[in-house]
Length: 169
Image 1 (cartoon, rainbow, N blue to C red):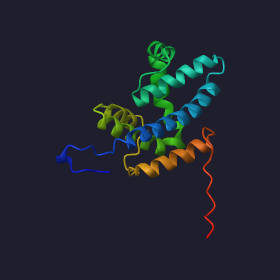
Image 2 (cartoon, rainbow, N blue to C red):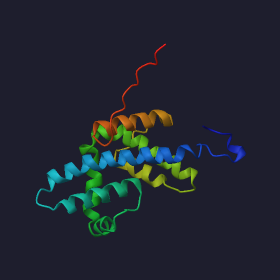
Image 3 (cartoon, helix red, strand yellow):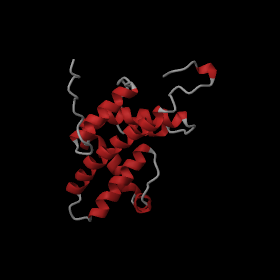
Image 4 (cartoon, rainbow, N blue to C red):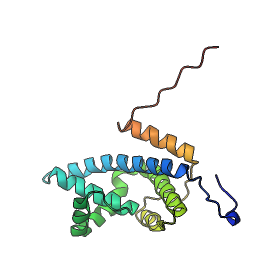
């Protein structure tokens, strides 16, 4: 995976980047599901659209991504203080997801870097929010993808992987 930095070859195989981005997206989807339920439970007097837009705005801010839904961007811009408060409180509501979130943010930054995108700001924000476990070792891509797959399965986003029976001799 790693190359000699003097030979101008990417540190991550370009074929791995889309797969890693897919895994990062799966972590975002799990985070969305968990956070949206938390938002729903805390803002019971608000609409489903409000819950979805607030959750989306928080996740987009954390990952430094542009919203796919224009309404989420408008909501985030119009409710900046609320989004920032939710970001500050995020650590308490997603404690179990912090290790995989750490890995996902790091993997996203690596992928971005390979594509010439500067996204270290997401890591710095996560660190400031207490969402980055700096002492955590960066997993190998295959390990990360397996962890994400297991997490997504637990949250009902994908079917669990079933072991194939050994071939008959």
